[in-house]
Amino acid sequence: MSNVGFLSSLSLVTLLIVLGVAAITLVVFLRKRSNRHPLEGKQERNVAADIEAGKSAPDHSPPK
Image 1: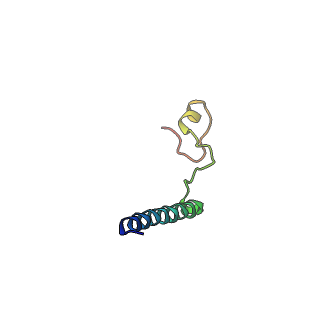
Image 2: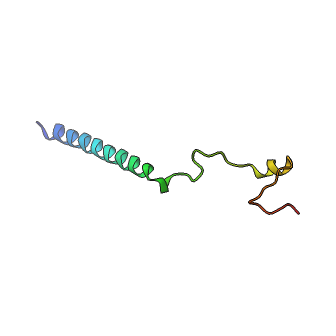
Image 3: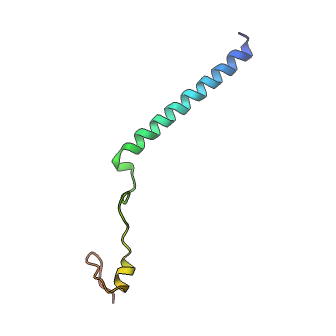
């Protein structure tokens, strides 16, 4: 194998290994609960719409 062929093969293999490690690292990072969005899977509450509809907002200060 010539030097050019060896160098291009080495570059390609190195690129594939780095991409594989990056993908595995990303999956492990996203699996940790502390790295997720706090409201993921929950419906965000629209307090302004609740107040306008006459509903109480128990965890917020009353309007003045």
